[in-house]
Image (cartoon, rainbow, N blue to C red):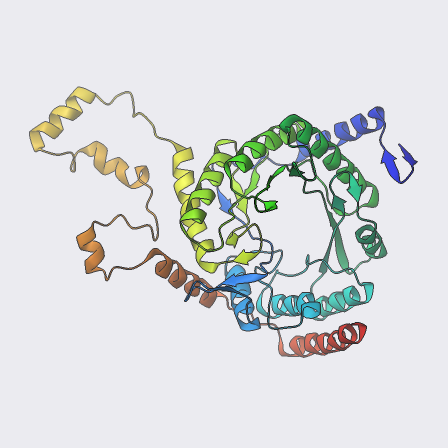
Length: 419
């Protein structure tokens, strides 16, 4: 490995040894049950899709707290799903952290902050609540660059007993920050991914791994296009390369859509992208409730994503043709004799497990739908989301709340004096 004119060069021998060591480490990890599908969390949304009006707008702190409680009810960790928009932008990370500490058991951290003094306030807030702060810095910049500011910030806290440090990798966009040609794009993504993983291992920080990305770039709108047909195709290339490097299957994926609301576009892109990934072997899905790349959070969509995943899981589970001892001719004769197959032993013993029973994707006919008051899917999804929010019983202790608020107030004064 050498350093010349601002660039790090890895020798073939060095990187091959690194890949071999990492493959051996991956081989020691337990395999995920192929049949177990699960939902994860998402990146914090800057905007909120109001479930009552479908208006896409900034959220109040109260709304952000409710969404945190919804995630808490699901037992999730990681980022808060929604950033409060009723505070000055420079206070967003501090306010989101306070919301996480006050309204959940495990949420918090990971929102990028580069001011070391502000990070120390965030660490102290977590210590007051009996937690550890999660510091995340974005260090990968395609093509083939590391962000020195993010690295410098991360290095300030490496080894601290009160903080978990992680550095995020590259997001190459085809035709913009990596080649449009799929093979060339994959080669650049592999180089960036391997260099990032090497960096994480050398620094002893979280992050890294061999999960490659190639994101399609829309030349009409100048943005990443999550959930598009091209996204699915690039995703297949990236997954196969990751599996080749790791020596094992990739099980983590994500919901994807460029839609701004839980609308027909979201339904199409999210179902198609999740089914495609499931067919490629993915079983755990993040970016739940996340729309417009990662700009918007919708609690309704987070419920609909559960319905979509149930549908996809049923498709992947497939169907058995039937036990060999079943005589098709005899079974058909039985149905002809009775005039139907409702009471046939084969139907009675199998129908409950054979069919997927959605929670809110009702299979009613029009008459029953009208008799039930013509409920809308979005209305039902919001009702389920409110039930989940109400299930969160977490409450930070009174003394801990006072201390968190005291530190927050001090941090607020510091940030405002900085600006």
